[in-house]
Length: 254
Ligand SMILES: [Zn+2]
Image 1 (spheres, rainbow, N blue to C red):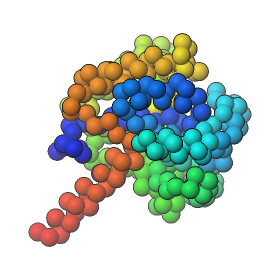
Image 2: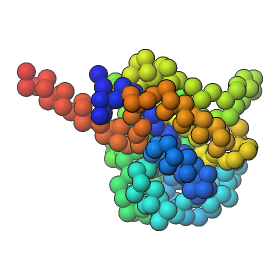
Image 3: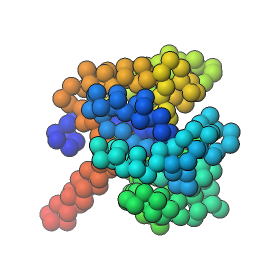
Image 4: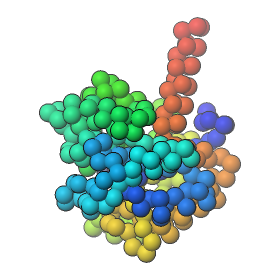
Protein backbone atom coordinates (compact mmCIF):
# COMPACT_ATOMS: atom_id res chain seq x y z
CA UNK A 1 0.00 0.00 0.00
CA UNK A 2 1.65 3.19 -1.14
CA UNK A 3 0.54 6.74 -1.71
CA UNK A 4 1.04 8.85 -4.83
CA UNK A 5 4.48 8.53 -6.49
CA UNK A 6 5.03 5.33 -4.43
CA UNK A 7 5.48 7.29 -1.20
CA UNK A 8 5.08 5.49 2.15
CA UNK A 9 3.46 8.24 4.20
CA UNK A 10 2.18 11.77 3.79
CA UNK A 11 2.78 15.17 5.38
CA UNK A 12 0.52 18.22 5.05
CA UNK A 13 0.03 21.45 6.99
CA UNK A 14 -2.92 23.83 7.26
CA UNK A 15 -3.29 27.38 8.62
CA UNK A 16 -6.69 28.36 9.96
CA UNK A 17 -7.97 31.89 9.24
CA UNK A 18 -5.44 32.66 6.46
CA UNK A 19 -3.67 35.65 8.02
CA UNK A 20 -1.76 37.80 5.52
CA UNK A 21 1.36 37.60 7.72
CA UNK A 22 1.78 34.01 6.49
CA UNK A 23 3.35 35.55 3.37
CA UNK A 24 6.04 37.19 5.45
CA UNK A 25 6.69 34.51 8.07
CA UNK A 26 5.62 31.06 6.80
CA UNK A 27 5.90 31.21 3.01
CA UNK A 28 9.72 31.55 2.90
CA UNK A 29 10.05 28.40 5.06
CA UNK A 30 7.60 26.54 2.80
CA UNK A 31 9.66 27.48 -0.24
CA UNK A 32 12.92 26.47 1.42
CA UNK A 33 11.64 22.96 2.27
CA UNK A 34 9.28 22.39 -0.67
CA UNK A 35 6.19 21.91 1.49
CA UNK A 36 2.87 23.13 0.02
CA UNK A 37 0.63 25.01 2.45
CA UNK A 38 -3.13 25.33 2.88
CA UNK A 39 -5.35 28.07 4.32
CA UNK A 40 -8.80 27.62 5.90
CA UNK A 41 -10.74 30.80 5.11
CA UNK A 42 -13.81 32.38 6.71
CA UNK A 43 -15.94 32.94 3.60
CA UNK A 44 -17.24 36.43 4.48
CA UNK A 45 -13.80 37.81 5.44
CA UNK A 46 -11.37 37.77 2.51
CA UNK A 47 -8.84 40.62 2.18
CA UNK A 48 -10.22 42.46 5.23
CA UNK A 49 -9.19 42.56 8.88
CA UNK A 50 -10.56 39.55 10.74
CA UNK A 51 -13.81 40.31 12.54
CA UNK A 52 -14.27 37.55 15.09
CA UNK A 53 -14.44 39.31 18.50
CA UNK A 54 -12.78 37.28 21.22
CA UNK A 55 -10.46 35.47 18.79
CA UNK A 56 -6.70 35.76 19.40
CA UNK A 57 -6.46 36.69 15.71
CA UNK A 58 -9.20 39.35 15.72
CA UNK A 59 -8.30 42.46 13.65
CA UNK A 60 -5.43 40.68 11.87
CA UNK A 61 -5.41 41.25 8.10
CA UNK A 62 -6.63 38.25 6.09
CA UNK A 63 -5.13 37.28 2.71
CA UNK A 64 -6.74 38.95 -0.32
CA UNK A 65 -8.08 37.14 -3.37
CA UNK A 66 -4.96 38.09 -5.35
CA UNK A 67 -2.65 36.86 -2.60
CA UNK A 68 -4.60 33.60 -2.29
CA UNK A 69 -4.41 33.07 -6.05
CA UNK A 70 -0.64 33.50 -6.05
CA UNK A 71 -0.32 30.95 -3.21
CA UNK A 72 -2.53 28.53 -5.18
CA UNK A 73 -0.24 29.12 -8.19
CA UNK A 74 2.64 27.71 -6.17
CA UNK A 75 0.72 24.67 -4.94
CA UNK A 76 -1.15 25.85 -1.86
CA UNK A 77 -4.79 24.90 -1.28
CA UNK A 78 -7.83 26.42 0.41
CA UNK A 79 -10.77 25.23 2.47
CA UNK A 80 -13.92 26.92 3.71
CA UNK A 81 -13.78 27.73 7.43
CA UNK A 82 -17.53 28.60 7.63
CA UNK A 83 -19.24 31.92 6.87
CA UNK A 84 -18.60 33.77 10.16
CA UNK A 85 -16.57 31.38 12.36
CA UNK A 86 -19.64 30.75 14.54
CA UNK A 87 -19.93 27.28 16.05
CA UNK A 88 -21.72 25.11 13.48
CA UNK A 89 -25.00 23.49 14.54
CA UNK A 90 -28.10 22.12 12.85
CA UNK A 91 -29.81 25.53 12.99
CA UNK A 92 -27.07 27.49 11.20
CA UNK A 93 -25.46 24.80 9.02
CA UNK A 94 -27.33 25.87 5.89
CA UNK A 95 -25.69 29.32 6.23
CA UNK A 96 -22.33 28.47 7.83
CA UNK A 97 -21.60 25.34 5.78
CA UNK A 98 -23.68 25.35 2.57
CA UNK A 99 -23.97 29.05 1.66
CA UNK A 100 -20.42 29.67 2.92
CA UNK A 101 -19.02 27.42 0.20
CA UNK A 102 -20.95 29.29 -2.49
CA UNK A 103 -19.81 32.69 -1.18
CA UNK A 104 -16.16 31.61 -0.93
CA UNK A 105 -16.15 30.08 -4.42
CA UNK A 106 -17.73 33.22 -5.88
CA UNK A 107 -15.33 35.52 -4.02
CA UNK A 108 -12.22 33.56 -5.01
CA UNK A 109 -13.54 32.41 -8.39
CA UNK A 110 -12.21 28.91 -7.81
CA UNK A 111 -13.62 25.58 -6.60
CA UNK A 112 -13.53 24.83 -2.86
CA UNK A 113 -14.23 21.20 -1.91
CA UNK A 114 -12.93 21.04 1.66
CA UNK A 115 -14.60 22.31 4.84
CA UNK A 116 -12.70 23.11 8.04
CA UNK A 117 -14.76 23.05 11.24
CA UNK A 118 -14.40 26.40 13.10
CA UNK A 119 -13.80 26.56 16.84
CA UNK A 120 -13.82 23.02 18.18
CA UNK A 121 -15.05 19.59 17.13
CA UNK A 122 -18.57 20.27 18.48
CA UNK A 123 -19.48 21.65 15.07
CA UNK A 124 -18.38 18.52 13.26
CA UNK A 125 -21.63 16.44 13.39
CA UNK A 126 -23.70 19.23 11.79
CA UNK A 127 -20.98 19.95 9.20
CA UNK A 128 -20.83 16.23 8.42
CA UNK A 129 -24.58 16.10 7.92
CA UNK A 130 -24.54 19.04 5.48
CA UNK A 131 -21.32 18.15 3.64
CA UNK A 132 -23.01 16.29 0.77
CA UNK A 133 -25.68 18.93 0.09
CA UNK A 134 -22.99 21.64 0.24
CA UNK A 135 -20.76 19.68 -2.15
CA UNK A 136 -17.72 19.15 0.06
CA UNK A 137 -15.54 16.08 -0.45
CA UNK A 138 -13.71 16.38 2.87
CA UNK A 139 -13.79 17.96 6.33
CA UNK A 140 -10.85 18.96 8.55
CA UNK A 141 -11.36 18.57 12.31
CA UNK A 142 -9.06 19.09 15.29
CA UNK A 143 -9.07 15.46 16.39
CA UNK A 144 -5.36 14.91 17.04
CA UNK A 145 -4.66 11.75 15.05
CA UNK A 146 -2.86 10.35 12.02
CA UNK A 147 -5.17 9.64 9.06
CA UNK A 148 -4.87 6.21 7.48
CA UNK A 149 -5.68 5.14 3.93
CA UNK A 150 -9.07 3.94 5.26
CA UNK A 151 -9.86 7.34 6.79
CA UNK A 152 -13.26 8.93 6.28
CA UNK A 153 -12.42 12.07 4.24
CA UNK A 154 -15.32 13.78 6.01
CA UNK A 155 -13.55 13.38 9.36
CA UNK A 156 -9.85 14.16 8.90
CA UNK A 157 -7.70 14.48 12.00
CA UNK A 158 -5.12 17.23 12.44
CA UNK A 159 -2.04 17.37 14.62
CA UNK A 160 -1.69 20.61 16.60
CA UNK A 161 1.76 22.05 15.87
CA UNK A 162 1.71 24.30 18.88
CA UNK A 163 4.42 25.73 21.09
CA UNK A 164 2.81 24.34 24.21
CA UNK A 165 -0.32 22.49 25.28
CA UNK A 166 -2.77 24.17 27.67
CA UNK A 167 -2.44 23.51 31.40
CA UNK A 168 -1.98 21.14 33.08
CA UNK A 169 0.35 19.68 30.41
CA UNK A 170 2.80 22.48 29.58
CA UNK A 171 4.30 20.16 26.95
CA UNK A 172 7.55 21.10 25.24
CA UNK A 173 7.40 21.66 21.47
CA UNK A 174 7.83 18.31 19.73
CA UNK A 175 9.09 18.38 16.12
CA UNK A 176 8.76 14.57 16.00
CA UNK A 177 5.05 14.57 16.79
CA UNK A 178 3.30 11.51 15.27
CA UNK A 179 6.03 11.04 12.60
CA UNK A 180 6.93 7.52 13.67
CA UNK A 181 3.28 6.55 13.97
CA UNK A 182 2.64 7.86 10.44
CA UNK A 183 5.63 5.88 9.13
CA UNK A 184 4.55 2.69 10.91
CA UNK A 185 0.92 2.74 9.72
CA UNK A 186 1.66 4.35 6.33
CA UNK A 187 -0.50 7.28 7.38
CA UNK A 188 -1.08 10.93 6.68
CA UNK A 189 -0.20 13.76 9.09
CA UNK A 190 -2.07 17.04 8.68
CA UNK A 191 -0.46 19.63 10.96
CA UNK A 192 -2.61 22.47 12.23
CA UNK A 193 -1.44 25.97 13.01
CA UNK A 194 -2.63 29.56 12.58
CA UNK A 195 0.06 32.15 11.95
CA UNK A 196 3.60 31.30 13.11
CA UNK A 197 5.56 34.34 14.27
CA UNK A 198 9.22 34.93 15.02
CA UNK A 199 10.26 34.83 18.70
CA UNK A 200 6.86 34.33 20.32
CA UNK A 201 3.65 32.58 19.15
CA UNK A 202 0.50 34.69 18.98
CA UNK A 203 -1.11 32.12 21.27
CA UNK A 204 1.07 29.28 22.64
CA UNK A 205 -1.85 26.79 22.59
CA UNK A 206 -2.85 27.66 19.01
CA UNK A 207 0.42 28.31 17.23
CA UNK A 208 4.14 27.79 17.05
CA UNK A 209 7.01 30.14 16.21
CA UNK A 210 8.70 30.34 12.81
CA UNK A 211 11.75 28.63 14.34
CA UNK A 212 9.59 25.72 15.49
CA UNK A 213 7.88 25.54 12.08
CA UNK A 214 11.26 25.28 10.39
CA UNK A 215 12.37 22.64 12.91
CA UNK A 216 9.23 20.62 12.08
CA UNK A 217 9.82 20.78 8.30
CA UNK A 218 13.51 19.92 8.71
CA UNK A 219 12.60 16.92 10.90
CA UNK A 220 9.94 15.70 8.47
CA UNK A 221 12.44 15.91 5.59
CA UNK A 222 15.34 14.38 7.52
CA UNK A 223 13.35 11.40 8.79
CA UNK A 224 11.00 11.06 5.82
CA UNK A 225 13.63 11.35 3.09
CA UNK A 226 12.30 9.97 -0.19
CA UNK A 227 9.47 8.11 1.55
CA UNK A 228 7.33 11.07 2.52
CA UNK A 229 4.88 12.73 0.14
CA UNK A 230 4.76 16.48 0.93
CA UNK A 231 1.24 17.19 -0.23
CA UNK A 232 -1.54 19.75 -0.24
CA UNK A 233 -4.53 18.21 1.62
CA UNK A 234 -7.11 18.45 -1.20
CA UNK A 235 -4.70 16.61 -3.50
CA UNK A 236 -4.43 13.78 -0.96
CA UNK A 237 -8.23 13.56 -0.74
CA UNK A 238 -8.45 13.42 -4.57
CA UNK A 239 -5.87 10.63 -4.55
CA UNK A 240 -7.78 8.66 -1.89
CA UNK A 241 -11.13 9.04 -3.69
CA UNK A 242 -9.62 8.02 -7.05
CA UNK A 243 -7.97 4.95 -5.48
CA UNK A 244 -11.26 3.93 -3.86
CA UNK A 245 -13.19 4.38 -7.09
CA UNK A 246 -10.61 2.21 -8.88
CA UNK A 247 -10.79 -0.59 -6.33
CA UNK A 248 -14.63 -0.48 -6.35
CA UNK A 249 -14.50 -0.81 -10.15
CA UNK A 250 -12.16 -3.79 -9.90
CA UNK A 251 -14.49 -5.48 -7.43
CA UNK A 252 -17.47 -5.11 -9.79
CA UNK A 253 -15.41 -6.36 -12.74
CA UNK A 254 -14.47 -9.55 -10.92
ZN1 LIG B 1 -10.62 29.15 13.17
